[in-house]
Image 1: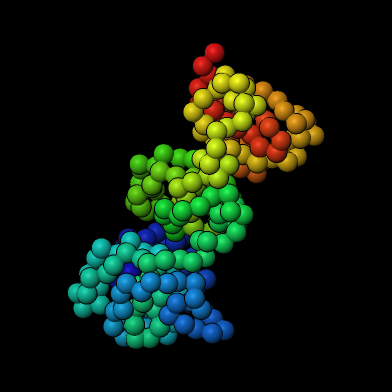
Image 2: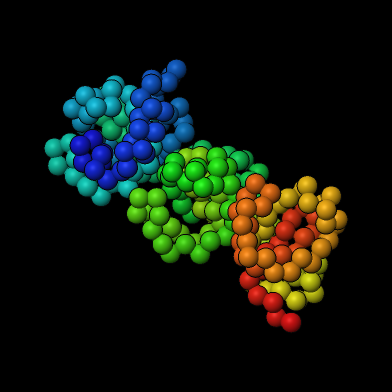
Length: 233
């Protein structure tokens, strides 16, 4: 951050954040009017006003560096209100209906600030399950879970209520023909083409119904596509 963080984030990311957050909101507050909660650090840094102004909603930063007179920076959501940086643990906006796909997903595991993902996934994308285990968006570690992109943030959830709370219907597995669920993709309009039920079979994956569909064996049970990794018979 400041002189230090600027070397860690891309020029495009900094420009996006600065353009969005450098304007004083109607009611300025360190928690961005309740968006953030669980304060984990408050850092005295009057010199930051030269670069960030009197108020700046910076957003997520991984921290793990020394700034403002060699003070250690914690990971979290950063807000500047002169003369302090406030670092928060929770982004309550993650609990919005959009980020959880109207409650389909629950138990938030991770949020990753990643404005660059919009170029590939659009402003909103219910990507579904990904095993993670890689570094993305400026070397941020990706956790396993169900991924939803709501610009500019990836939300990673532990549970998909459509797949984890009960056994998958026999229709979706074609009576056990397919196994290892990779993704559930909602597409109401495909009911016009495929009806209430259709065993499409293998597809290599790609853009479908405004989302990215995984490679696998596709079964349509209105209004969802169930995408499976394996055909067992």
